[in-house]
Image (cartoon, rainbow, N blue to C red):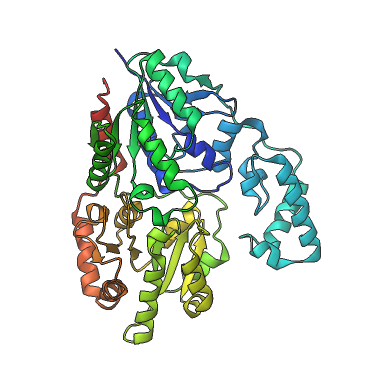
Length: 466
């Protein structure tokens, strides 16, 4: 009997409502869904989500097949939220997060127009834009005669109306706290005979709650323990995560099969887009040597110790130090790091923070950097390490948790809890070009893991009948 596979994208639906880029977890989902559609077609692969109509709905998965490489938040928002979504070409600079909220979009448009009339450049700069870009956008809009037509949008259907015994729901993203979704999955198991499998990326909220805030850890623990009621098995993205998950389920008294599917060592370079421009900050960074740090900026990423290691190396005066560039979504729950940045004036300008780089900007940063750094105290996998390797760049990497599974013998390791160790690893790559070249040579001689490999593993473990 031919099975249908429903890949849950509820987290992507929630994410694109306000964000302009996607995180590592969403990239994993899109890459695997794309691979599954290429092999088995949209009739057998669907994307499922908890809709605004309070129902577990789905689309044919080919609506997402170009999003892995050419992510467009407005296109995805339109699929999930309908005509109230503004398309990218119709969104004024700095208002992207209000693409699905017409009232707030209107209010903040008035606020921006007010500051534009005052010539208040600082207002736009603080929000990641510029007065010039705002005025240019509205000058262009006044010249337009009509809005572009909306793209076709498939009609969503209820998963319960399509699912047959033996079909599978695969959850690859963050759905904890969605109690209605959990109930729907339980009903699909009982009424439709549908199995659910969850990809667990890490157990950080449970094993390292000091890096969480509010009631997040409790909510995650409640979700993971409750998932055993409808989940027939789990995937883990690394051997390290599989070990943690197995121990957790045994302790809960709900052991389940766990299949390890290591993620890719790959960065999907976007195709050039006509008219794409970099923000001035990125253009300036590309003109001088720098080391790149990619990822959401949160405490477990160990940002402060890395910055302190940079200060130690600069103060020693033995090396011609490159700048240190953090590229990713800023998380406001990093008070120690933010205070240090303010107190040192970003290490007198040696440190830069690029908030939410576009795919094109991130590609350019990877291309131009000397090497990358990821000194996290805890990772479930470590996507930026693999991305760096796929771009031919070695890295300074923490020797903790799962990261050695990604870096292999192609990176320089350090103890993430020791500033001296981090500094020594960075100094070796900065001051010893021959050693850096050796690691880069190992990269070229290694067959790196691709998203095709990841998809093949999912196919094998899901027992897809080809």
